[in-house]
Length: 320
Image: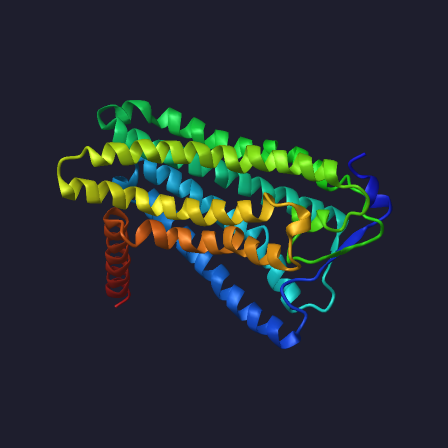
């Protein structure tokens, strides 16, 4: 039964990134800053896309979904992580551990699916520009977005069930800052080959399959870009796709390094460092990667600043 361990083991202990009190305080400051950047950056993108009519396109619609997803993803792990940095007791109840793994893993799978959808959007925009608005209609975009969220919260259920169905032999110290599949599997005893195989197959489905579709999309995109006559057109097309390729490389590279390797090859503490990249670094970098070279977003940001300034001036004049 899925809940059979609950009668034996009612809580886990998260060892976190360090046991040294001074180091934990330093890490608290660092990751508080990171979390603040994630909140501000992703929230700003959502506001800009919602308020600027020029950004009401499929590409920015999916970017808004990505920003909201990153807000949820980081919030599913970072607040608990920050709390533990300042706590002596790092105990997490069994039920909360299950919930944290399910939610964070679901959001991670959502991001996998959404990155595929964003690659498809760029593929249609560059390879079929004349039919782009027809293919990527509003209804199609909404259905694709809903599909990514449904995939995330449904496809990972087998992985959670398999992970929490193993025999823990009374061990409850997780060498991680959150409840994550590979870290929990490392607590198991006995023959875990079948469970590792099931999780490996699920990882192939949830990680390798999406990245294969993304690679195919970008091979076709690159071939189409090379056919563009003007050098300025090629640069613009590469610039549009380059940011997405960078996100894909960081997210999928670190996720596959964590989930698609045998337990015997894992070094103590490496998984939690790797998970920082796809769980924390990627949500922080996404707003920067998608906006630093994006003139549309820059223009929307400047327009928002001017509007705020004008509202402040008008409010000040009215008060006088």
